[in-house]
Image 1: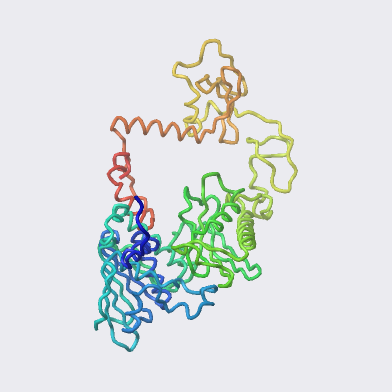
Image 2 (image 1 turned 135 degrees about the horizontal axis):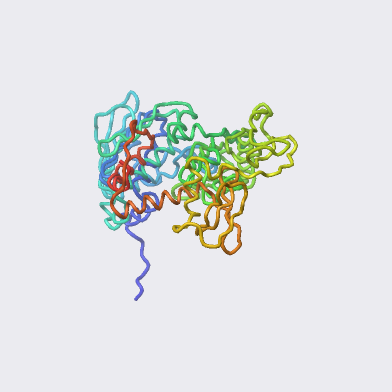
Length: 507
C-alpha cells in the first residue's frame, strides 16, 4: 500500500539533513574547530568525555558573537561567510553552508556561550532541534560550544558508533590534520581527563615534526614547486619510510585538510617506481590555488574537491614529488630508490670498495664503483664457509640441513669447502653470495637461492611460535629500557594491548 506524498515536519527534515554532516563525534569536532579557525582563533581547546558521544567542548579565543548573531547562528543556512552569491564560487573559508550548528542541535544537546571583545557574553541552548532563548552569561572573549548526549534524539544512530577509544582516536586524527594545516594556532585536547594533544604555535616544519614524529622529520624530503599558479610545498618521507595504509598522507588545499582521491592517486603514481606494492608513502603536502580554481562544495564533509583544471594540478603534483625523490636518490647509502651513480665521487672514495679489484681477487662479487670499469671477475669460492664461527649465516643454514645428516650417496661439490654441507629439505648448500644469499642444489637438480636473512627470520618465528604455544615464552629484560615515541592514539592502543603483548614476551 502506497502512502500519499506529504511534506516532512521541519524537525524530521532537520534530523535527516544532520545525518550528512554529523556522522560521529569527529565530524562534530571538525565543524566546530573549523568555525573557530574561521573566527580567527589562535588558541583552541577540545575536551571529550566518552569518546565524544557523552560530551564534547570546543573553546576558542576568536572574534565571538553578539546576542543577535548568536540567535541566527543556530538557524539553518545562516552564515557570515558568504556575503554574496559570487563568493560561493571562490570560497576562502573552511565553512560556508550554515548547516553545522543547526545539524548538531537537531541530534544532540547544544549550548553555545560567546562574547565579542569589549562586549557582554550571551548563551543559547538547542535540544533536539528546539531552540531556546538567548540569555546573558559569563565568559571570556571567544566562543565555547558544548555538545552533550550526541544522537539522543536519534537513538538508532548510536549503535553505529565505535567504542569510546575508537571515537576518540577519530577525533584526534581530525585535530592532527587541522593542526598541521594551521601551525600558527595552538591546539590542546584531552579525553576523559587525560591530555592527548598539546601543540604551541610554531613553524610548518616544526608542526610537521610534532604531528608526524621525529622519525618522519629525519626521513623527510622537501617538496617545492610553483607551476602556473599552483604552489606546492611540504615534506614527503623517503620510500623506505612507508606505511601499510594511507592514513598518514596529509593533503592540505588552501588551508583545508582533504582526502581527495585524485591527489592521493597522484601520490601513488609518483612513488610507483620506488615503493613496494602494498606500501603507502607518508606525506605532509600543501597546495595553494586560486579560490575560484577549486570547488569545495562537492562533498557533505568538504573533504573532496573538484579542480577547474584537474589534469594540470595532478601533473604539477606528480612532477614536484618526482623532483623531490630525485634529489633524495642522489645520496649514497640512503636507499631512496635512485641510481648510485648520481652520487658525487667524493661520497664513494677509493676505499669504499674493499670487495672488488680489477684482477678478480676480491672476496665478494660486488659491482664496480660508479663511473669505473667493471672488473673481469674470476669468482673464487669462500674457503671459510665451514670454519667460520657459528653466526648469522650458519643459523640460516639450519633450513638446509636435514635432521639425520648427509643422505647416503650424496656427492660433494668441492667448491673450496673443507667438508661439503649436507643436503637438507631445501637442498645442499653450495656457497654464500654477497653475504646475503645461499645457493643450494635440490635433490631433483634445481638450483635454489635462499635469502639467509629471511631464513633466519623464519627460524626465529618458528622458535617463538613454539614457545608461545607451549606457554613458555622466554623473556630477557633489557638493562636499559628502549624508549619508543608514539602518537597519543597509538600509545593508548598499545597500553590497551599490554596484556596480550606480555603473553608474547613483550613487557
